[in-house]
Image 1 (cartoon, rainbow, N blue to C red):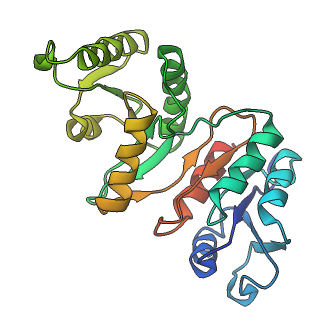
Image 2 (image 1 turned 30 degrees about the vertical axis):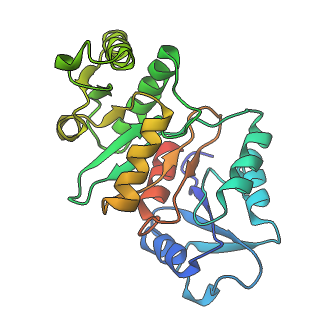
Length: 254
């Protein structure tokens, strides 16, 4: 009903203290339901508006509660990726998931990046759809809606390799059709003015994500799945906390 308190689910497997601390830090804004196996979490550390749902298969119950509307949105948290996303795909009737990741550089610059899965965003049509959905997320999270399209080189590199030429030609097309800016290969410049970055393909997007978060000292704050009808934010177990992922899930559920 109008004005009802939002209920956001988050999964716990590893690092229960980190997940609960994240839930506590945003506990005044909505209710957080922590899904975990029995005995995994210390319930005494939870603050007001933080609750627990214990099951032998928490990933399955988290997805079921999301689909059935018992929670308004969900964050994977530290639940295993394979079984959780498999359950989500089956429940939502899709064969793959399209995600848009909220990233933060080591210097504190936040931006959205997509595609970030190796099977995502391979066609012009798919990229245009990701731009449309990504701009909505950028607006909700207070990031610039300006979109930067990356390609495999600088314009001066045309002629050096057919794949580079094809990458830049496609980027120019996507930029024109999507009212975006072709930023060539210069991601370091693109993030200064663009809140949404479109990688050339899912492989390079995944490499950017992994390099930033696992090697570059940056952080991944969650990646909303945008090709399903419910709000699910995928997350990395390498995240320093899940407060931003919970806030992102809550804002998208409005």
